[in-house]
Length: 409
Image 1 (cartoon, one colour):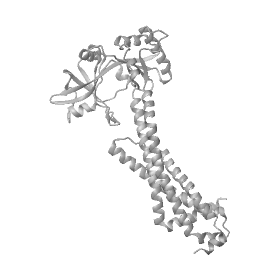
Image 2: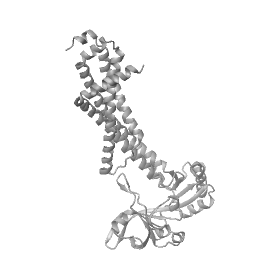
Image 3: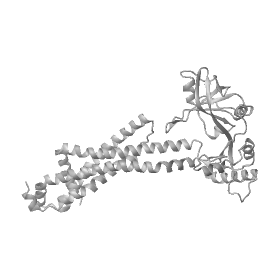
Image 4: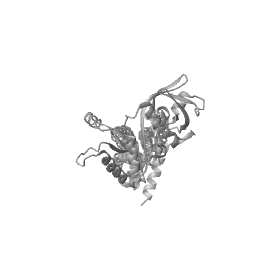
């Protein structure tokens, strides 16, 4: 059963070795197509992985309670949500006391400001006032220094933690620890440098300063609504904890059970992942279609070359049939030839695709994620292209009349 297949494969490989230039030119089309698919898949996987890591920094068991949703899609919603009362530190303390299923409760508030050191300044810096336990909830790691202590946060000490953009902009080549920076005219001593987080979609995640929330409110006042961060016991109890938080918050605010609006929004990081997925799904689909077109073009090249090969080898086909070769044997021979061309092109295309994705990653700062599944996909797709576009030339060769084929010159 397998002997005709192996024989056909042997003849097909011999023919490819004899016609090296033709084989190479045919393979180029497949290489380009597979490289396009692999590079797109690799870059997209890298982006998806980075986005997931970015938005899930707080952990899958963490959610937030906010006055306004983080994503507002219409003007009417914006006007409706702006009627809500601000969340206060007292709300957060109430929740910390009452919520049984809450493992950790913290709160923060933020704004943008200019940070100065001597004659240097950094604009548009995210100034974030944090309560105790926020650093623990978000699992903030440090490259140097230490976190803020509970005493410093409660007393409103003028100390801070900075991100790497502050170090790069204000302290190039110098140790920032112990230095005093000015935030909205108030001096804060740097006691810690957070671990570098990098960028996403060209936006830096390291342009921030953490200060005690009590110090923040002395500078900017207490009227601004805070955000409450809650960590459930584990991932399995997140929904239960969110429900308990909703009940306690509605009770504290005296919200009627008839009122559909809680007066606050409870959100997890999943909202950003869903928004990202919805925003990029069509873009990714178009990318796959465009890269797939190049594979189709490569397949057409394979079919064209195979048709030329059938025409040139008509007499050879006649001799094989005269010697007892069946239609199936001829069909298998040419089909294997098409598949081998496509599979070899697929292997080289995978390498070219990874190199292309690497170059894209270097010059655009887009992440890349190399997976064995993408390599398997590349070879599988290229082989499938060989089968699809090799069927017609192979069947045409198999249908040749042996007598007419022997007469061919």
